[in-house]
Amino acid sequence: MMSTFIALFIFIVTTFSLFILYYFKVYWHLKLLHHQQYLKKKKNTSVTSPMDLVIFDWKNPEERAIRSEALLMYPLLFPVDMAESDDEKSIRIKKTIKHWNIAIYLALIALFLSYIYLQKSGKA
Image (cartoon, rainbow, N blue to C red; front, top):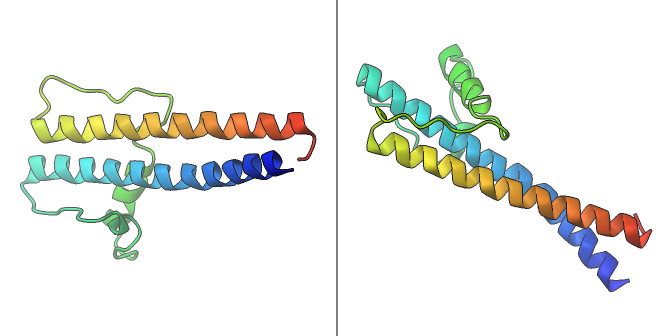
């Protein structure tokens, strides 16, 4: 009984953690996009907190387009491309995105293992 509860708890926690991890991954995508725009236009727009991903002027189509692009920038199964021409900050942000991908993969593994355990125990 207790092991089923623990497995169910791990399943629920990993499910929520996937959403949270993906949210932070998209936040770093947005930081990368803002940094790339800064390099092109020298326009000082910065993303300071993860809440900037959802708290912005929703009526501004340019801001919505940037958020949509950040959401679809690097899917999980595709590599993050690092060019030699990238500057140091871009490389650091891309490495951070890779680390978030690894965290999401580990959370998926935990989710699948807890689901398999729940199925084997016959309680789910």
